[in-house]
Length: 362
Image 1 (cartoon, rainbow, N blue to C red):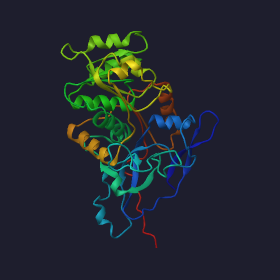
Image 2: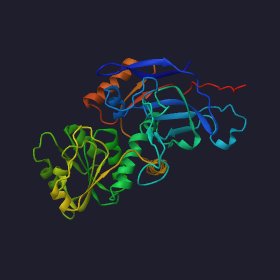
Image 3: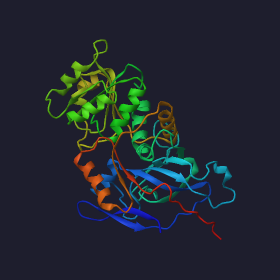
Image 4: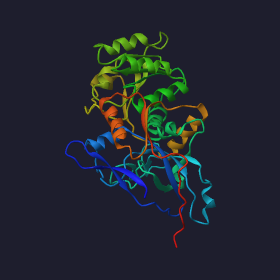
C-alpha cells in the first residue's frame, strides 16, 4: 500500500508516524498524482509543536509538492489535457480563486489539519485538474517542490500588497534564510528592486548578497541596525519604499524612520510570536501596515509563469530521500527548529521510475 507521514500526539512535540493509506481514486475532473518531492514550511513545524489550529493526526503533513500525473482510469479523461508523466505543481491552498482583497469564502492550506483532506507527504494524491500548474522545465524536482507555498506567499506580499514591486525601489526583507524571505529576494531582484536584508547571521547576509541583495545588517549584534541600514541606502534614494516582514514584533518601530512618506510594511507572519504595534509617529507619516497571507489561484498561476519566464530557482538547503526515512526527515524539522537552514528543506518522496497503473472501478 502507499505510504504517508502524519503526526502522532505528544504533549510538547508531536512525533512523526509512517502509515499505510489507500490508493486514491479520482473523482470527476480530478488527477491522480505521484508525489516525487515535498517540502517543509514553518507551519509544519508549528503543527508538530502544537501551535497550529485544527491539527489532524490522520491527514499527511506538508503543503508543497512536485508530482507526476498518473494514468487516469476513466475513458473520457482527454478533457484533462495532461498526459501521464506530466510534471506539475499543486496549488498549496484551496478556496481562493481571484479576489485580490482576500478569499471569496473559506480558505484552507493543505497538510496536517482537519480543514483540508490533502497533505503532500505521501506517495499518491488526487486533486482537481484546475488546481495544478505545469512545473517549470528549468527546475529540478526538489526545486519545484520548494516553490508553491513560499513562492505564492512571497509573490502576493511583493507584487500585490507592497505596491512597490518596481525597478529601483528600495525594499527591506527581514529574516533572510527562510523560504519566503529568499523567494522575496529572488522575485525582487528579478523585478529590478534594490533588496536589503536583515539576519542574525553574517554568513546568511553574505549568501543573500551573492543572490543579488544590495546589502544587509545583523539585527542581533548591531544595536542600531536601522542606522546601519540607512548607511547602505543609495544617495539618490535614501529611504525605504517598503518593508516585507515575517517576524512581527517591533518591526514598525524599527523601520518607520527609514520609510518614505506613505511607505508600506507588509506582514506575512509572526515567527517571533510578538504582535507588531503601530506607533503614532508611523501614523503621522502615513505609513501603512498591510497583512498578507498565502494567495489566490490566479496569483499562484502568475507566480509560476514569472518563475518560468525569469528562470528563478528556489534556494535549497538540504534534501533527504525516502518517505520511510523518518530519522532523516525528523532531522529536517530539527534544522528548522534551530534556524540553521538557508533555503528550503525537501523530502524526495519516491524515485521517478516508480509508478502505478490505477484500474477503473467496476
